[in-house]
Image (cartoon, rainbow, N blue to C red; front, side, top):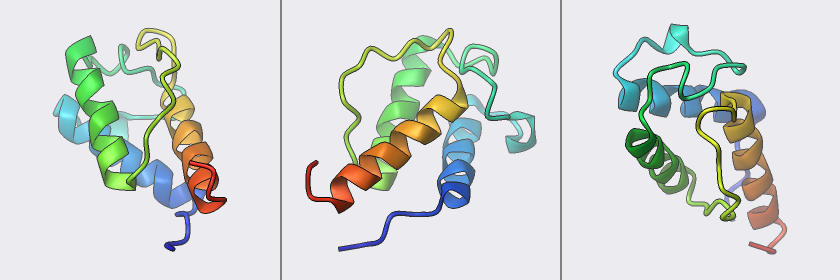
Length: 91
């Protein structure tokens, strides 16, 4: 079983996935940014979620992510929680 990535590694990878999908400089992304702030349309946001799930080999619970108000930190926290659940064998 692989160890979950550190919070910094998760943040860096989530930023990279968002930057690639939104075609923006990763330096413009902050944990407080929303996908809407970054110019990510809702269809592109779904692709961001798929890319994150695929990269980390996780599945987010279907919790109705709000792309207008949920922050990048929310995504990072969700990845960390999903990794922790997977490491515990409960995912």
